[in-house]
Length: 336
Ligand SMILES: Cc1cc2nc3c(=O)[nH]c(=O)nc-3n(C[C@H](O)[C@H](O)[C@H](O)COP(=O)(O)OP(=O)(O)OC[C@H]3O[C@@H](n4cnc5c(N)ncnc54)[C@H](O)[C@@H]3O)c2cc1C
Image (cartoon, rainbow, N blue to C red; front, top):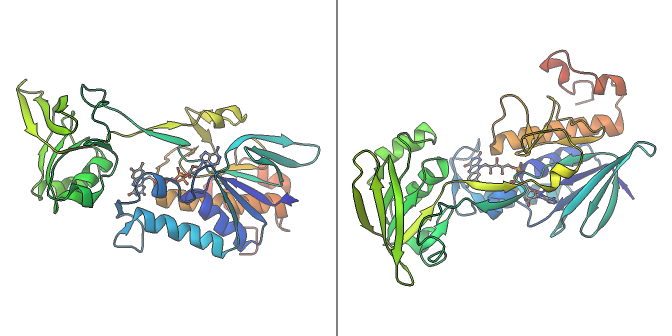
């Protein structure tokens, strides 16, 4: 079978693309190395997402499940636990071959939506961190129930750290520290932290995490004064970002900027028939957000549709011509 489109990665971008390719009735295969849902399912299932339009807030795992259910409802085929290792364009056959750990597929178009690839939480590399990992030292959004009634130190100054601290403020005694002199998260989160009982300290760094089999305290240093302080702590929640492993994608012959794939305004890459969306894609003004992953998924799907089905008003030349301006890049020639 030759698929109309193979989508690599079943995160919000790939699942949104699948929704739109299925609305076009393109045969659609999604290949996912882990579980469908992307970062929502694997990195922050217990975090409330506040910036998804139409929801006051929604938990990561619920939103991830909604994305998957919608794609399944549209009859996209999702294969989990299958890792894509290579893609290769065959000009003579006018298709792209996608090789995974379970086989090789032929596709008229491919959408790369691999997000951050494999994730690993960034460490702070302080004494005690490795020894007490899993015994009070946690990474990412903490589990709210297991923190109930405890003293929690959240380390970091970006959105994830602020959100982690806020999610615990009603159930735990929370201290938040950040090395720099400004918070780096959204203004709304910063304001909420200021108005909450959270003890929030800028220009404060971790010196050592102490404990005997479990975290008991954390030694911090206030950078301005040089003073050290030992905080009695039960749980350390480290939220200083993730290391994204995009090594495999780098071997696929796609034009990159840093470790991201360069796309034009309609999500085309440098390889004919290969499109890209979500966190792995880059262009001037890129934001790595759920909402942009969804919109880029829709754009990639429409461009793949034009490439595969070649609706009347489009010629191949038009599709691959550099757009004169962003308006020209819209897939306005199709029937929708
Ligand atoms: C802690 C945290 C909190 C966040 N909170 C928010 C928030 O509140 N609001 C917001 O808008 N954004 C938030 N984001 C960002 C948001 O999650 C991302 O922008 C979004 O997930 C990007 O979607 P994606 O589909 O591009 O990538 P991903 O969600 O990363 O999905 C990509 C999928 O591709 C799979 N994959 C990778 N390589 C392969 C391969 N070779 N073969 C097969 N499958 C592969 C991965 O397993 C993954 O499931 C947060 C991010 C983090 C880390």
